[in-house]
Length: 44
Image (cartoon, rainbow, N blue to C red; front, top):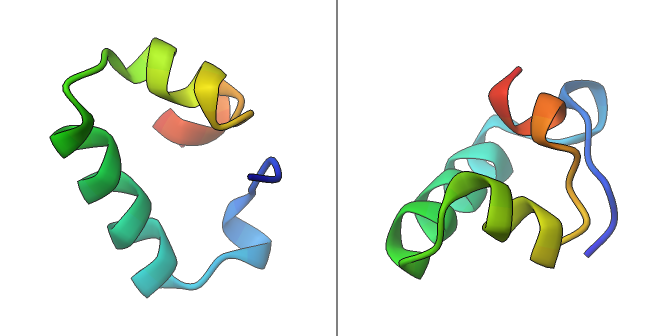
């Protein structure tokens, strides 16, 4: 998965990503690392 930012991702996609992370069983940091998402982007 490509790194994402608020400016280029729809609200629906953000919700999907957050749900995916929550249900993955991984920590936020590990999930972001696996999907090449900067943790600062995830928390913003």
